[in-house]
Length: 399
Image 1: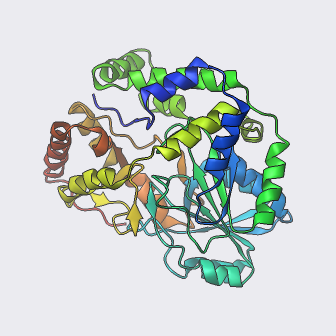
Image 2: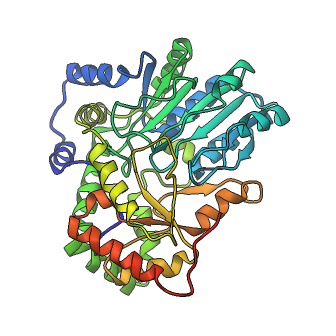
Image 3: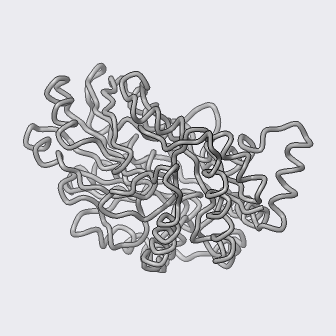
């Protein structure tokens, strides 16, 4: 069984993180300088996660309770939760599944109607589309935040030049994961320094916290090897649990009742060193893109290629849409491919106000990533998708 979970970190790096050998302060300082630099001339700030950085940024912006915040209609639930934690009223804007971005002008319209002073536009599934409205929004005095937590592949993309700030994530299931960590890239160095000072007031997570996390993902990485993964799924089912829920929760970077408590912390020095290593050794994303594009070119027309018209795509996930996603999952799993609909915590904010985004998430299927499959496995997956699409009761999907 081919797993949909792939952890983009080598065995040696996981073992190094788990071993807990001493790391000198000088090495941590060098790693910090490396991670904070190289973002197109803008100032980088390190946090425990992209959510940690968003939390600190909202605290520094100090918007009054009831202030409006424009947000892309799809994001992880925690980003919406944090906006509400600060008493902000979310103005969701629908997205175009072909680009995974709002339609040009949509954010400007939402701002004109709401008077919002902050706008968060998310880059989804590894896609990157230009922030078309960013310059005009900034001219209106709006703070424009690019949420690129899913978009990092290598340093070829350092954030949209028109954004006031960009957030990148190196959480457990992200590209070039460091098992945690995030970078906020700021246009305004004074604001960057304020965010950094706020983050420095948080308690630092311990080295043992990272070691425990590394052991966890060593185990998960081993369990997702194809010869083992099928047996694992069967054991979960026999135990009466839902594999979808169990695996999704196991891979989650933060959990627990209090989001604020879990994210308000500093990363340990070893995590900063690991993050620097993962960024520095990130290979050109072209081979991953080629594998996905070659795969998608063979996809039957009954499936919609999500994000196919994005300007660039790092393919963090490979998402498609179809009319009967649950049936498609069962069919693919019967052929040895553990596709899923819920390995991410992405949600459509206020589905009634973002109907296209809601329909996309209702019909989405996340496939095992082609870049993590052998050529033979990719052919078998395409064959299974073609067989499924050939059923007469299926028709192409329209969002």
